[in-house]
Amino acid sequence: MRKILLLEDERNVRYAVKRVLEEAGFSVKDIENPHEIDNLTSYSLLILDIKLKNTSGIDFLRTLREKGFSIPVVVITAYANPENIISASRYGAIDILKKPFGKEELLGLVRQVLKEEEPSAKKPEVLAGGSIIGDAPSMMEVFKKVGAAASSDMTVLLVGETGVGKDFMAKVIHENSLRKDAPFVAINCSAIPETLFEAELFGCKKGAFTGAIKDVKGKVEIAEGGTLFLDEIGDIPYPLQSKLLRFLEDKSFYRLGDDEERKADVRIIAATNRDLQSLVEKGKFREDLYYRLSQLTISIPPLRERKEDIPKLINFFIKKANDEFGTQVRGVSKSALEEALNYTWKGNIRELKNTVYKRVLEVKEGYIENLQVPKESIKNINPLVRELLEALPEGEIKRFLPEMERELLSFLMERYGGNKSKIAELLNISRNTLRVKLSSYGIEG
Image (cartoon, rainbow, N blue to C red; front, side, top):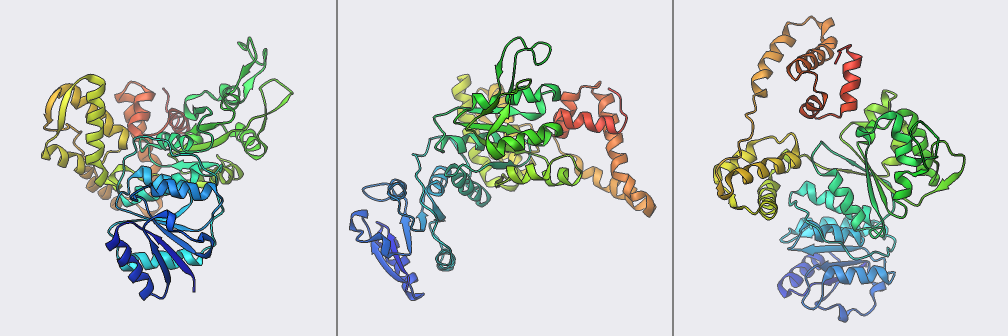
């Protein structure tokens, strides 16, 4: 019979968990203090509370890993905040159960864990602080993966819509990794002209091109020992993708115009709001690079799928805005909160933050009675689109989407006088993507 060690200082919880497990046929030893542990190697699973009387469960878990103990650990806690979830995952916890949890939830997880192999021991550092907000179940899964990413050196691909916080999560991974004391360097792949991209990434030798008046280090060298964050990786020029792949494979590269091979010890985190698999199928993104980048993929859900986080985010941004502007806004009214919960937030957290900051500056004190979000009228368009589709001959249906896109882009170019930055922002795509679309449709501007 496989033995379970339960470390929980709250008597009622300890007895209840022990009873459930023993009734299911498990052998359980329950203790309330880490000093009571006799021989940890004799147990197949440790169930650990985060908040103990004389110590932190997280600190105890970290100590175990530093000493080389690889016993599987399930964390139980009433304090399932993002920092605790990331930290527990960072130190190799298999899963986190939030109190109160049900009998079947506990037994299901224990049975699942005991069928799995024990995780390899890790040698972590202390969790870095930071303001991370999210109580939604989908975000708990994100935090677990972030913790796992921080404990390894794998390449990470962050996916999600614009504004969900991919850049922030990349920094959280870096700040909780063994590389935290080295540089975190970011590149926005959609903001760099294709002709300058290689020099930006790998550096250049003096005279490599007009204007190269001296040897210049690229971002991979500047990030030595740390993390290089490649935002909007889907926009990286195709000719450069093979060189990035080579760097990922053996950490070697050449400065533009130089024949000296160089090395850089850099961890890569990439992010995208595009469907890279679709780009692979279209021949616009290398398949081997995609698989190399996505060793660990973390999908960050849009705000509309985790609306339970909106109230906390609003209060967080109000506090930040008050600190920055010297305002004294105390919160939002019930109607303003309902307004926020009913809005789709296409720009996600970034749009929410900008909206709150704008209203704090306007209100200055007291409560925000309304957020003044734009009225969403897309529902009124749906019947018109359906009417058009029903009138189309079957052979014309495949042309509908590109023709609609062409008309939409032509309309927006006329309305905004060819302002591509504005149009790209409205469509939630990069300027490079917009330029490609305009060119493919023969739209001048």
